[in-house]
Image 1 (tube, helix red, strand yellow):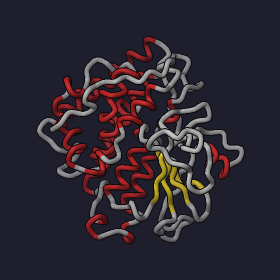
Image 2 (image 1 turned 90 degrees about the vertical axis):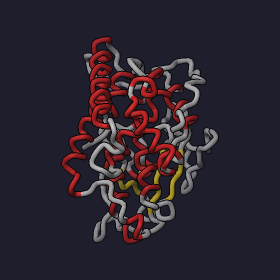
Image 3 (image 1 turned 180 degrees about the horizontal axis):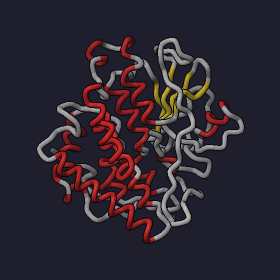
Image 4 (image 1 turned 180 degrees about the vertical axis):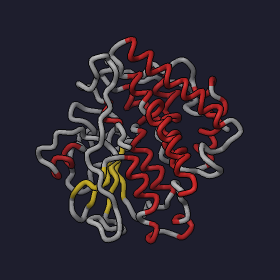
Length: 316
């Protein structure tokens, strides 16, 4: 499944004639595997992310769940999207942003153009970079999540290698949940937020909340979306739900209900992951999230970042 990435939501000509938001697919879809062009090796690969971006944060969460911090480095871009796209700290030294460590690039686009000088696609995050061959391995978050899930198991502890977010026995159910979440929730908030007609907006926002209603029933009394263990389905939903009240409710007009007041089961599920698992709370930067969504001139021309909600997330 190809996914729209966050930078696909940067203002630009990506709406269909009816005003609905047009999703952009990823361009680099290689994998890491023994015997392939990209072999699993320690300190060969580097992950470029934005804390504001839910797609990039998927990869960041799984990197930590799998104990890959010493295997794969990471660099964070500024949350403020510039005219040239995601910027590094060299040109926008926002707190928590990094300088690009290999070429001191100003923008993520320079890495794409280093690989393909005539590249015409979107300059998105996440980017999985190969330092050895100086190229992009993959910029599709769903692929990167699965690469991280298994490709480096021989380089990490047996405890972390045993963590399987896409177990064979649950794959059919995971795929079914992923399809629902991707089309109407992960992408649904963007379809609502970047719609340019009333009909397109209402269609997207109604589908979004119908799917949230459905997930509320699934999660009633449950800790996980599929089976009795953490899977990639939980990660893929979490990154949207954690941003919902602080960003999508206001910036994207997804305001029929909030998660905290309208969906008790989803709200509890989200808070359990956030407060009980470092892979979730240590990769969540609410300042960057708010700044990213409320600095978009298309949805918030004045760039004023809201103070609330207070707190960003409620305690358990």
